[in-house]
Length: 428
Ligand code: CMC
Image (cartoon, rainbow, N blue to C red; front, side, top):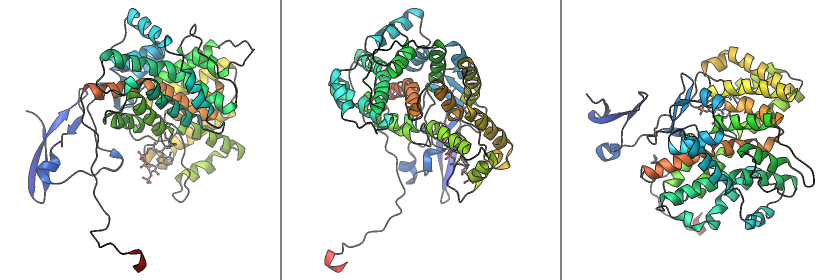
């Protein structure tokens, strides 16, 4: 028998169907709650609200499970590549060798950006945070490809926008960095793979030979896989809600980049390193900082700790911690902040405050340490997250469009003044 839920309001009972997911999760379908009862649900921060059904990513926060299209994150991080994962997320299945080489080839064909985009870049002062530059350049594609504004365009048209997005993102990202340091931009070298191409655009200097270190490129590829999707998080929900108004893929993803920027979301990776540096400068007294994080009168939070969904461990953090060890030893980097991070983790995991609240290191806790070892500057960390998350945003935007979902428009409970007469300026 189909499962149902009963809601009783002022003694009257209403029945609602329960939708079951393929992993047994249950959602009470309150689609006609307002119509039936005159009430809405109230859920600050959508802590208990499913906004959609999705076949892309499965996450079990209690068990620490993350799977893209049914494949475990552990297996993908070990055996796959970023572009293969991108294909999987966007099109639903692992590509055949022919499909993968076609997809990579199409991406290579679109890595150049219109020269006029450089004029937009030139308008930014070098003090501009690269995330702001990235979201602006990404959205600027709407001007260069006006046909992308048509929400009903063909399958081929959507494919072209997807390929352009993946192809140009590393170019925009590297250029945002070049703007910051005041260097001339580099053009994409299409003889290289996705991550190597980005690294060369980031780091090559004019008139100097630059060889990409394969250890660095492989580590970056793994990090991008780990960030590629995470179901209905803040930035992805932003992409879906903007996309639900039939806004273009470029403007929807640009909105997602802005949502990611905040320190409670993707911006945390930058904050973690700044925090570890501050603790180091302060003498490395980890206990003092743990106490600050626990003190409700102190705004300090242990950045890189806690997660809305993971309440046991974040599987990405486990993989990244191990990768941090590997990368640092392969590159011969000795980073004292890694030691501070490990000490913080050890103490926090034994502390009742963190245990009771189920606060564990999240994906951002160790990723900054790797990024730094790879030579990525701190304010580019969130840009790296954005490059990684792009396939997820694309897949979710595409799914929303294919499922013909309605425009996102939450309700509210109004708590302001009741109707009152206007008072003229002379009487105030
Ligand atoms: N340090 C100290 N206390 C914390 C922390 C922390 N990092 N995170 C949560 N708490 C406490 C919080 O004060 C609250 O305590 P109490 O119940 O006594 O009021 C309790 O734990 C629950 O926290 P919450 O803020 O209600 O939980 P949330 O689900 O709304 O927030 C979070 C999740 C990730 C925003 C939060 O844990 C946080 O601010 N962490 C630090 C920022 C961070 O690392 N963000 C990256 C998240 S993972 C990557 C991503 O999503 O992009």
